[in-house]
Each structure stands twice: as C-alpha cells, then as structure tokens.
Image (cartoon, rainbow, N blue to C red; front, side):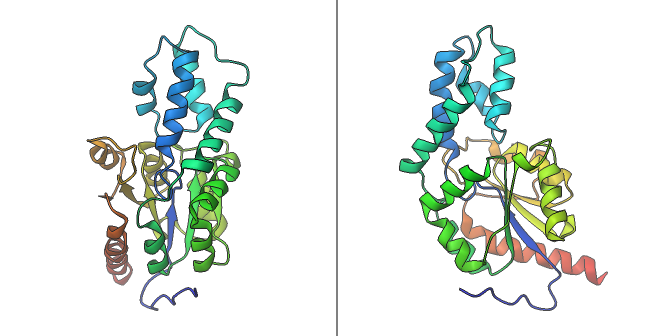
Length: 243
C-alpha cells in the first residue's frame, strides 16, 4: 500500500505508538508471568498490587524495585527466566489490539514505535500478530526506538527525545499513543501531545483519570477514535501555525 500524500496545508507530523498495550495486547500476558514468578520468589509482597503501580516500566526496573521492598532475594537469573517465559507465552497467546491494523492502514501518515521493551520483543510481538506485514505495507520500514538505546527509560523522556531527534521532528510535530502512566509521563515531558489508550485487556477502572493526570491530551478506549483525534490535533496545530 502506498503512503497517502499529506495535504500541503497540514504541517509536518508523525504518529508514534507505544507497542505493549497499544499495538499488541501483551501487558496482560506479561503481568500473569510476573505474578506467578514473584508470588514464588517474593511471597511477602502482594504481587498484583505492586505490578499495578509498575505498568509501563521495564521488567528489569520492576524486579529491582520489588526486590528492594522484599526480605527475600530474587533468583540469580530472575530477569532472564521471566523474559524467556514471557516470550514463550507471547508466541502462542498474543493478539493484536482490536481494530489497530485497519486503523493504521487508514491513517496514511508517518509512523514510529517507541517502547520500553527490547527490540527483539517488539519484533516478535509484531510478527506473531501479523502487524509487521501491515506496517511494512504502510511504510518501507517503521522506525523503532527502545529503552536499550537510552540511559533512562520511560517515565523519563529520553527515548522519545531520541526518536524525535533521530527522525528530524520537533516535539510539537509528534502525536503519541500510550497506555501507561509511565509512557504518558515520558512523552508529555518530551513536549509531545499524548493520547491515552485504555482499550487493552489489562486496563482497570479509573485508569483514564490517571493518564489525564499524567498529561494525556485525550483518552480513547477504541482504536476507531484515533482518526478523528488525529484530525482534531491537526486542526489545533493549523490554528497555531496560522497564528
């Protein structure tokens, strides 16, 4: 599929997706693995409550945070074991977010992915769900930026700043879709407009308010809302450009 030409009246722009919980419904799978492992390893903590507060953080950061709160020690290869188990579950159970494929195909605008997951995890997720073929039909290659490329992952803005700088976009030219407080915080701190997404399986009641408090411009529960929000963002930007 050829990229649609952007009308000349629309300023330069790019749409940036988080991956987990935005493109693919993976957070619920990762949370189950973490709950199972942490329940055995750190039995003095309530894993479900702890993980609820850690949505959007890297697995390494989650383990480090919880290990410091527990009287128990993690196994030596805790991170590796969890990552391998998550990858195995993703390969068999992962689904794309509902309607995300047709949404991407209908947008016709430059895209990028910014994730706290490693590049291999993102690529596996896109391949398992068939989204890699959808994305490559829309663009020759969708740029991918991950936490491994920066010193400080989300909620710090570093990975979003790296993406904008590398691709040649100013922060105000970037529209971001994020599902976590950590991700919204990062993109907002980078000076970008952020849409919060609450349509994944792991989202709990009240999460929309948390995303708004973190800096989300709007919150949507269905990918079908994205096209109209893109148009609203364009109109707002056009008014700013025209003075």
